[in-house]
Length: 160
Figure 1: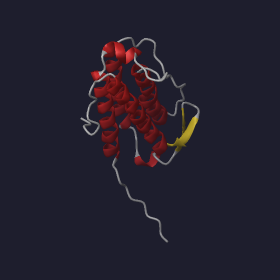
Figure 2: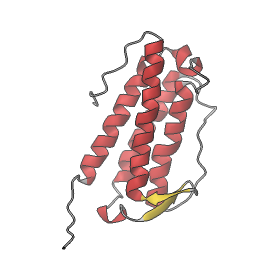
Figure 3: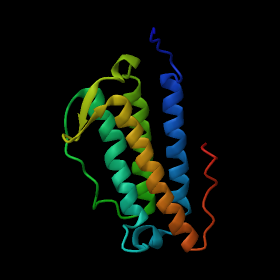
Figure 4: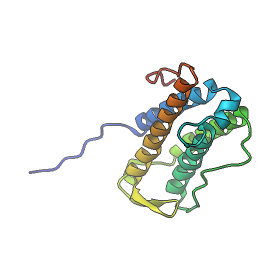
């Protein structure tokens, strides 16, 4: 049996999918009241601001490692982020960095084995899918927080 390979998504399609999720997560950050963004939690989970800092520590830095081959330590918390506006500014800068780094990606890189943050081994594909899946998982926590605060979360299917 002959194995053939076909491309389901283009690089541009995958980036647009990822950035669609990032746009939705940004909307979730925006609807949080400032105090609750940094202080509200349920069942001992981290605040959504702290969760978002983890996402900031993974997405652009992880992609930067894939592109450059330089290993860095995972930084899941940034004590300098003290306000919603600062968090959103960092989110926007991270989004721009992902777009810039993406220009260096080629399809040939995706099956390569990488070790992000010096400890998580997988392919480029699996690493990028992890970045996206992890964000979706944590955004779900944000939705639960918003519902508990009686705030209507953004529609999950609107990713603009």
